[in-house]
Image 1 (cartoon, rainbow, N blue to C red):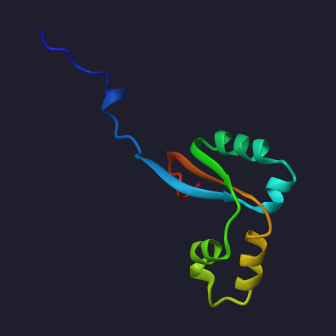
Image 2: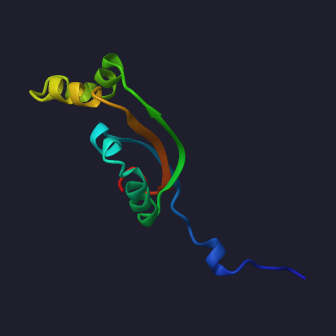
Length: 98
């Protein structure tokens, strides 16, 4: 006797995506990490890895290199190195777009 999977198991599923997210120094200083993580979860995203770090100038410049020629670049790097940040990997359907 053959067995068939219900149609719902055969429907195409969106693939899980992963994206890097950084909570900025002001969010860490205001102690709102938990609130922001709740928003991630409500949006269907799962935090699969996280760590607190204090970015060096070269790390911040590298991460924001796409903005190097913009007038706000120096201020952005200065702000991102002014205190600890929370770095996390988020996973979920359409995580990159969310």
